[in-house]
Length: 166
Length: 112
Image (cartoon, rainbow over all chains, first blue to last red; front, side):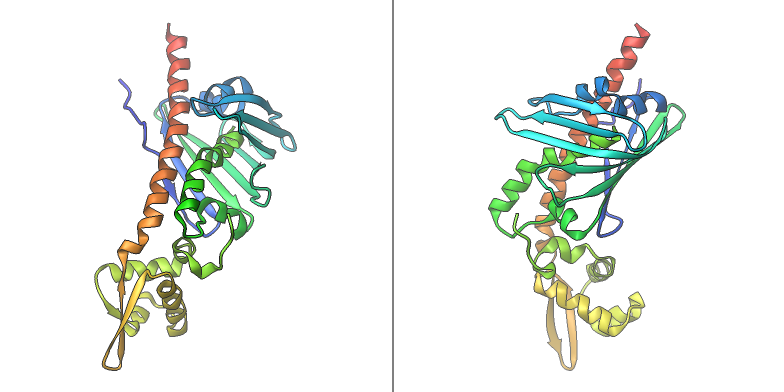
């Protein structure tokens, strides 16, 4: 019986420009890598339940591009794209990511996978090029409205993550 | 979202290691600038600069005690960050839980 790890992601902010997420999966590293990097798998988990993945291409090699689009229940398109910089199956990918809703938020995402005793630990580091980019993740202009917008954007904001990770 | 100057919100105020160390230092209670300087091995100008930023967003309050200036933490002002982090964490967890569920589905399929 494997433990239920739902809700166990650890989120850290080691520097002004980085966000690091760690999470364990009860699966071998090769399988986790495939699930994060192959379109046929990514389509199955990338979008929230009520959203539909309409585009998912991943050219998994250094210099190769990926592009993932999903459509929310109200018809809003969320598009993520980037270019792989490093691909080392089954333990590491590094890729740029760009969420088209935030054209100035350039970031590089590194995914590292380590397996021990059948448990694979994923460490995802999202490093923004500058403060303006990271501010999208954390910024509020102090009004309730901006918090509401932040909440609205949250899922799409997080999804670029998986894009790259896969 | 409109951008605002660095010191105008809690998120940016705490996105600096030195300022977070000062907040940690004040968790145990009100302290004089000199005590913070000594405890954190930061320079007095550095500490004063950080305290000014923290004061501007209301994360610390200052009062005079004779010639000393004492600073204390206004923890309630961390609420927006706490709320944001909770939502952020939830969204991340939902997404990684979908990966987890899908991995389980795949592995169960293999066993059958």
